[in-house]
Image (cartoon, rainbow, N blue to C red; front, side):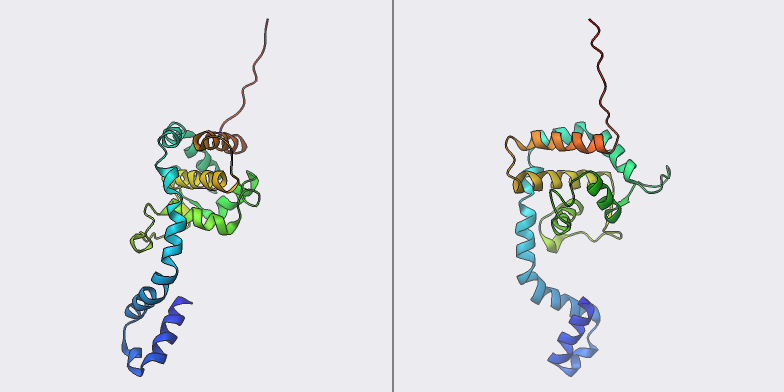
Amino acid sequence: AIIHVAYHRFVTDTPQSTLQPLWAKLNVLFRNAFQPNVFPELQKKLAKFGDAVSNAPAQLLLRRANKLIEQTLDSCQLKRVRSATVKVDLRWLCNHLTRWQLLGRDFNVQELALIAVFAKQTTTDPEQFVLHPQPLEYNYAEFERLLLGMAYHIFIAKKKAGKFEEYLGEMLDSIFKKAQVLVDVARDNDD
C-alpha cells in the first residue's frame, strides 16, 4: 500500500517522476509525510518506557528471573527444536497472552503493537530503528523487553499502587505460574 501511495503521489507531481527509482520515491514519501506527522507521536509514546528500562531494581529482577523467562518462551514455542535458535512469533504469543489473562483484559492489540515495537527496538527514534528480517519473531532478550513493556504499560495505565518493580515481580510470578514453569510447593506442617 505504501508503494502505491508513493507511486501515485509522484505521478501527479511531474511526468518525469515515473523515471525515478522506487527507493527514491519511498524516501521522499517517508521524509515528507511520515517523519513530520507520525514519528514525533511514536517517539513520544516509546519514550514513556524509558523509566522502566532505567529502573535498576526492575532490571535486577529481570536478570534474576532470566532462566524462568527463557523457560516461559520455550513453553510458547510451536516446535521445540534444540539446534534452532528459539524465536516465537508474536501472533502465537498473543494466544498465550490471552491464556495468561493479559491480552484483552489489561491491554488490547493496539497497545500491544506499541509494546511490541518497544521490545524489538532499543531506541525511541524511528529513524534509527533496526530492520529485522522477521519483525514479528521474538527471541529471549526481546521477550524479556516485551514482558517489561507489558508490565510498565499496565502499571501506568491501571495506576497500580506501590513500586513498579514490585508489580513487575507479581506479574512475572503470575505469568510463570500460568505458563507452568513455576509451581507452588505445598508445605506440610508436621508439628
